[in-house]
Image 1 (cartoon, one colour):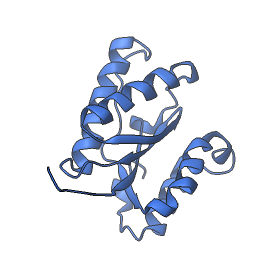
Image 2 (cartoon, one colour):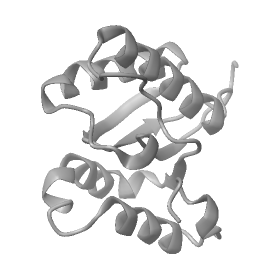
Image 3 (cartoon, one colour):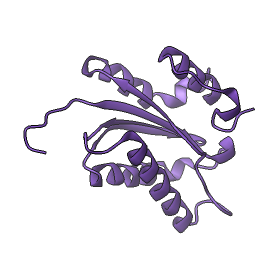
Image 4 (cartoon, helix red, strand yellow):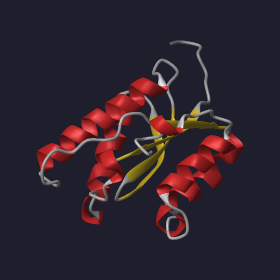
Length: 152
């Protein structure tokens, strides 16, 4: 799109189905690289990416022609197939249905990047559920407990 200039930064958060801790540390770099390739292929830019054994955080500079839902869906489906094809998980691997997406201004990027990079330290004090609910509340997102990434 000629003459279209945007600055769209979105953090996308999603979890392993059942929040199982199945993503092994030795596969993190390869899986993160694969997801980055999907984001790049869609014309967006991966700014930061990190994961825990049960969930992922991506900070993306979003291309305006791509919806957040399309990007998240393609990252999740592509990486799910990749994990399955690599044989890293015994049985079937799936991400949970849905995701969280939170927008930021350029002035907030450094703090968000630090937050994503420090997931391991952060989760020594806070569970993924606590973290996710905190995001929803901080951003004023209304949610129904029954549909909160499968928690009930």
